[in-house]
Length: 178
Ligand SMILES: [Cu+2]
Figure 1 (cartoon, helix red, strand yellow):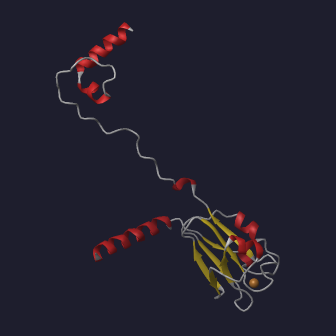
Figure 2 (cartoon, protein in one colour):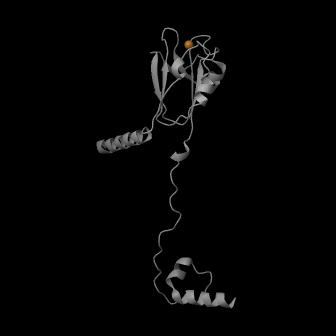
Figure 3 (cartoon, protein in one colour):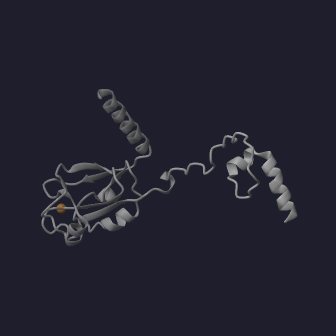
């Protein structure tokens, strides 16, 4: 049991490392940071980035003036800070993108979200992350054991056709006559 847990943990760690191998760190608002000052357009900021799994979002701000809360889409739209999903208050908060989809953040200080201190991080599916499709080729079929054929049948299964040259010859003859 313990071994299974350990193996699973190792697999998870390896997966995390692989996914984070190309991780980027994005500071929200770039040099402006997380603020109501200067009318930073966070929508435009987010639109200029391509967020992927393993990427890190960093909020830098004065913790005496601002905070960061993660909210639902509806709360994000209406600047509703009453039921945050997560909250951050250190002034230097990092969040790692672990699932695809939207991460909605806003400042929970009254009036700040309305002033534009809100950001929608959309971690989209990366085109190159799609797993290659396994080969559609069927495994080689084992020739069917030779048994007296009860009679030629064009509808014979492909496997027995491959393993039965007499039937194959007959099929060729039939095809030639047709
Ligand atoms: Cu604020």
